[in-house]
Picture 1 (cartoon, rainbow, N blue to C red):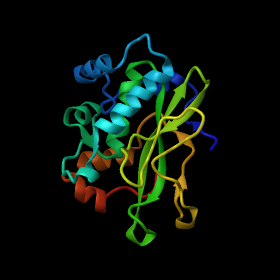
Picture 2: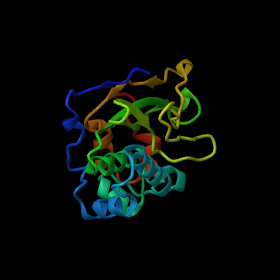
Picture 3: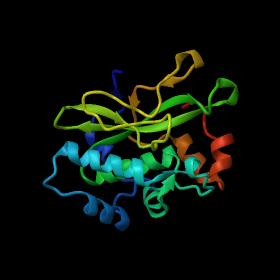
Picture 4: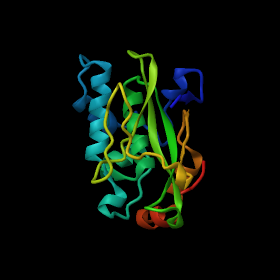
Length: 202
């Protein structure tokens, strides 16, 4: 896919916000624990990717009702849905001066269209050494879902099924989608939110 940055300046993909709160002490502590500044750019991104993918549980997978949104809260409670996990991934990489944005897919919520659709969040990362953007998905692996960190090919958690009217959006946004953040902020139960209230279009 030809990825299209929403913004021309990489600075827009390094900004801090209320939900991408990378100055939070817990985020700074975790980054310093994981990263040595002698590491290459690709090693840094790989280590952070693997950490968020594997150590932050997906709320639906563990059937947790807790809703997290802010990157620091996702790290504190070590759980969240894809919207929340992508916030943490972006925060950690931005704290390391690596431009990171937000990408989206429209997917069937479960197996078939009759069960509804949802917007799924992943991240776009600009690799300076490669001079190009790559997409990475920290949703979390389980049987049937396997995302990996590769530089020469993309292996995301989900493949688009065009027969089901699923969509792979090519834009790399500088900020998380307002609908996704609003959904997290107003929801009280992650399981009910996941089944009934996720946005289904950007």
